Amino acid sequence: MFDINGMSAFPEVESHQKTLLGLLNSTVSHLSLKAINPSLAFQSGDIGRIPVQAFPDVAELDLVVDACIKIARADWDNFETSWDFRDQPLLRPGLKGATLEASWRNWEAQSTAAIRRMQELETENNRLFIAAYSLDGELQPEVPEEQITLARAEARRDMAAFLSYAVGCMMGRYSPDHPGLLLANAGDSLREFLEKVGKPLAELTFAPDEDGIIPVLDGEWFEDDIVARTRDFLRASFGESTLRENLRFIEDSLGKDLRKYFLNDFYKDHLQTYKKRPIYWLVQSPKKGFSVLIYLHRYTRDTMNLVLNRYLRDYQTKLRHRLTHLTQVQATAPTAREKTEARKEADKLTKTLHECEEWERQTVLPLAQARIELDLDDGVKTNYLKLGEALATIVGLVKEEE
Image (cartoon, rainbow, N blue to C red; front, side, top):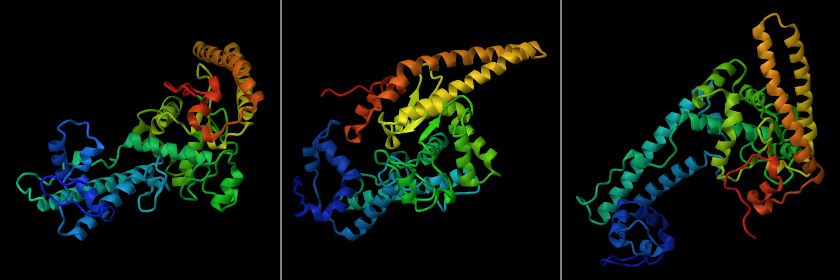
């Protein structure tokens, strides 16, 4: 710290970190920076020139700064992008209610209270520094609520985060039975999951998917379909009796049907959350007739072989069986309307089947045979491109120059 305007700097910066943190987040530092550099392009040297005044009551200030840090850290850790994320707030004791909506209302009340408390603390922080710098009458301590950067309760975003956590539990990344991150190493499996949770499979509140591959299709073609598993997660979390009510709240918050959300928006939200470095990868045919999610940390050299044989080929078999049925409906249906509906569905499924057959031949089968190995040390960007056209396109994701 450098001294300008005749003010004394702290002799040991390290011993006054909280005081300096309070200063840098005060209106006094904002005023100082405007005087030092009228532009918005502040440099480290500008920060170093902020005048530091000897503070009369460091203990009082430290209490304010400590409280601000505690609230800000708790707010950050509520989201799964934090290294210290432990659980979904809506399922947390003290916030979890009888229904998902009740839980969200509790979360809304807690978020509002945290914002108001932070507003009070930041105002007090300003008051202390304004007094220390003898700027009473020159600066006002009050902090507008819109300047508080803590997360606000927002139903659409919060339901997207809830569903992201649910998918994480399906993949074994998280679990209602154990706080924090579970499967996050290359090639992790259910064995590692059970070892970390410390419970046998039969005693889990919600069991992760066996192979870490979740179908995302236009209907429940598979038992581990993403919508079916989401319903299972809601049952495990809130019980069977509130399932319909919880699904309604999710869909009202999202503004659309749950399946449509997973088909059209989930992966977009995931890419936004993880800044185009997804941990769940969408294996998807070019025209989106077939899609499954895989988990990067459960990927093995045999994953694409499992996608091919357990899902893609099985899906094609199911499509053929459905087409046979629709052919019979068109021949025997008693009304023209039923025949027309059967024909339209058959036309759609025929296109999907042809797409899947071609995609299998050109893309999925060669990748399954290649048994490509990923190296997590190379990062998502490099590894994602190794599976090429088998994955959904991420706009702007290009391999860095060597």
